[in-house]
Length: 338
Image 1: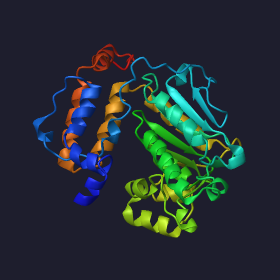
Image 2: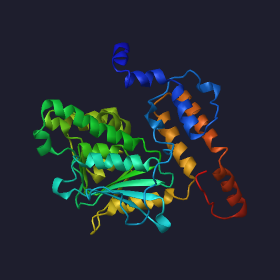
Image 3: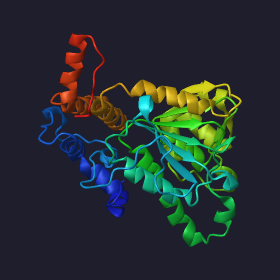
Image 4: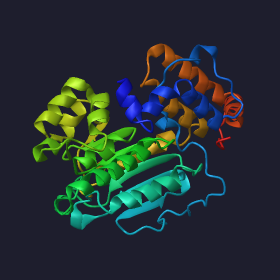
């Protein structure tokens, strides 16, 4: 292990060397001046990736608003900021019908969209869906992959992994609405989301071993964390494809719905969940996600210390005082994310 860490100072090395500096860095960015509890000092914590994207970029342009407004990307990825009672919900709609929403040029578009969204404090929940009937994302474009040389494949897969990691590191809740086929990288994209909902007719699987490769977009790591190591191995070894009911039974998704005539049952459920999240305190939502994600990578004692540090970040906020005042006055709170 020591040799591996030394060989990768920018990845594994930095993770193990980070120690308590990780949570200190997270806390400093979320709440400057916060002092961490002594119980956290010197303890080993998980990857620093969860800290990324929590502070708006200084001077960064805010995305335009409007129910049907789209950031300037091609039509293969449509970014909608919902309005009125859905204000704060952003929908990323994948629309590459001719390629079954395969991850190709789409990766660049996702990267740009995520970069803009992670620094937008008005964003409260992000839904990833497909606008192509019957398809969520078919993973890699195999026709394109067949034209790549061996030296090109590795860097391309690294780009896919990096973008999927960026989605996993978004500071707000993310929901994957799976209304169709989600294979390989498509399922890895969904696994990077906090919550997954699917239609019963949807098909999901990490099928890479059929092509004599392995999942390269985080599937070997996120699937075991979602459903357990033994079952994840079984599914990856067999390249098995599950329908929505089977995926729900193994814990891969949180909700399964009978598909409707419009073909968007999972999206509608995702929208219902996002609406449930909207009334909650924005700062609390972000630090709750941080506490859960970071705590799952460490032992319980360290995880509780992380929770303590994250809770402390909510104490000085105006939103906390507003919540108490709203309760006293028997009215809905008006949170501002401050």
